[in-house]
Image (cartoon, rainbow, N blue to C red; front, side, top):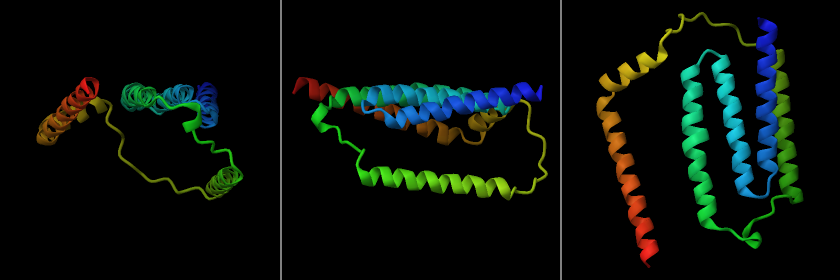
Length: 168
């Protein structure tokens, strides 16, 4: 079982890393957003492998779904021309990215050599979704309702602003 688990981890990790590299190297923002969606799906797969299916589902719904749709809409509504896109392939940008990559690699190597001690913890609840829902609708009901009102006001405001632009 552990061999297949390792294989799945490497597949999802490789998919996330390759998609992230393709995301940051695209000049056009729409294909870049699609590669970022691929990263989000790979991370959701890793969450499911770590016995956190609720977090994986939220990852897909919130990030791969809602946030990326909003991002693509904003990019398409901005309608940037080719001359308005900045080229970040200068020597300084490449040097900075290289230094950050080296720092990340050094950090990973140090973390690999100096393992943190294991901390004893209580076993996790088997039904996390039920615990989150019970807490959300009992202890945090007022905050939940206020958040829904704020989101509703934001949506209505966005619609009104969009209508004013169309009429003008």
